[in-house]
Image 1 (cartoon, rainbow, N blue to C red):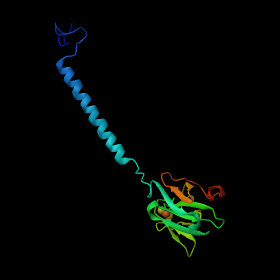
Image 2 (cartoon, helix red, strand yellow):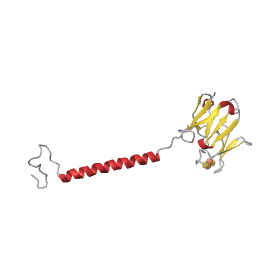
Image 3 (cartoon, protein in one colour):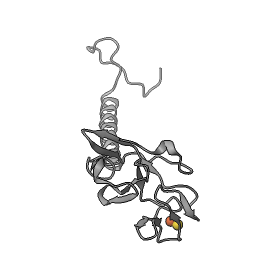
Image 4 (cartoon, rainbow, N blue to C red):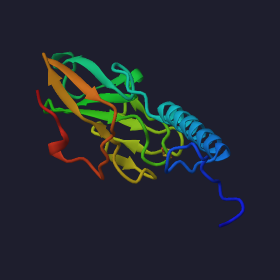
Length: 171
Ligand code: FES
């Protein structure tokens, strides 16, 4: 038998071969693991996207549909989107994030276009590219209607290459 192999004490129950040193090492390891898991959990919680209703990342109530005339664009700065209402009455919640490199676009009512200040991309009212380098239409967010109010869920942007009529939401 090896010299360093711990031996059970004579009065210890059968099967208990863990030395005091090993027991302490196991305990320290378990405590270390608990600490690591706790720290990792806190880091994940910190890095996870915040989801607060009423602002970007959560559900934003845009108000009643009749507040928005056809052909209008209304900015919701806290939600980081524009609510666009097409001429036929359909709604789109258009992200303000340019699809080129992510700058914030702004709405220019006189030109009826979204313009990106960084590299000059332009988009029309429904977010289609009118002037590159933006490679695709502005992203959109899902719209639902509850008690007559339009609700925009900004948790997950919907990517699209270009506008399609089925993207419009009707009340
Ligand atoms: S980030 Fe908008 S055009 Fe480059």
